[in-house]
Length: 269
Image (cartoon, rainbow, N blue to C red):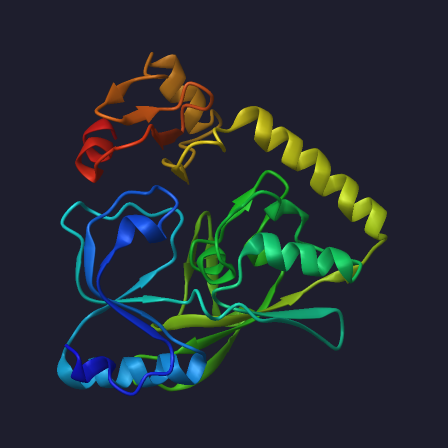
């Protein structure tokens, strides 16, 4: 597989232990982990892998459980693509690997509102688009203006928000890798933005198991009652298999108590 990753400017790691790259701290090795330097580098990776018939799995790192035997083929991470810049019209552009905390901090510093809902979400901006991440304060579709992708042919294309079908924790995008996102925000007083963020971070700290490795909420809310409340009502709060446990703080989280295996988490779910 060395020929398929030859000439890339980013980082290439063979037999990479994926537990080191996920918020769950669980997962076997990737045949090869590639961190492209930029969108053009990602395009080259896609073209070379496609020519060789080798699959690419895009690793976000959060909201993800990697099986104990790992992932065959090429795993791509956007960890080196973290740039954030302001554009005219109260627009922020962030590369796909930029973390939402970083993007939100950047927006707050510029006095731009619209990302307060993401306070405490550890995922990348690309991951937040793909799953239409959200909280009770809002969701990603509320601010997406356009998305930059590397398509299956390795070409860089742009997709306006109007061409994306957003739904609850899902976005139907054209096939490809999200390498950048334009977000339409609005000006607001920094103090007001900071107050909203501080209040929601306090709520998350009090209600969620942020001190233990996890992958965020496991189940979508089934209806009026949140999934966590349903699980708790079933008497499963604190249930444990190996080192995987239904959090005793929030029942829609499964946490890694130290040495959990993917098989433990799957059995618990």
